[in-house]
Amino acid sequence: MTEYETRWIDSKLPSGQDFSMAVCSYSGKIRHMIIGKDFLRRTMIKSVDIDDHHCTSGAHCLDTTCKFNTTQREHMAHMLDMWTDEKLDEETAKIWGTDSAVDALVHFAEKMNESIPADLNSGSGGNNGAD
Image 1 (cartoon, one colour):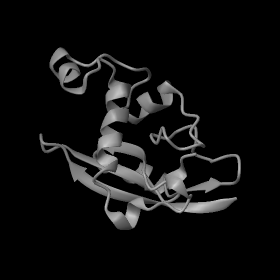
Image 2 (cartoon, rainbow, N blue to C red):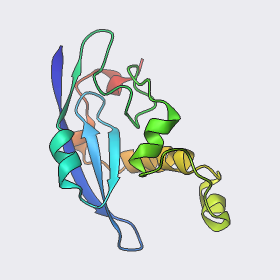
Image 3 (cartoon, rainbow, N blue to C red):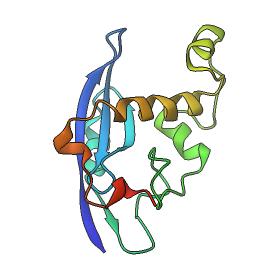
Image 4 (cartoon, one colour):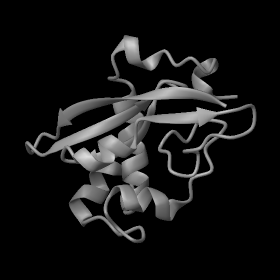
């Protein structure tokens, strides 16, 4: 297996709330997001190991375009500190076009992928990890 580093980017929501994004150096896309700057998660989420058929973090990943992603919805909910997907309030649901917190998280990650600095989003997995 080949090890691919995870690089962290800190950002803020318009409300001022801190959040952090973990960028996979295989796909060049966001694989994990956390509210705040959780030191423990940053310590645990440092890299992924990939071979021709498997990624060690494929079951806990926000990059839905990666060929190794096998993430189930409840694992995406965990990134929001939820046990299961929850409905968004009406105003937020209208903004995101969904009432699902998990779907909004995935959409937000996809939007944030567009703002990843070029030196982090190139990905070394070829075709940014997608098939």
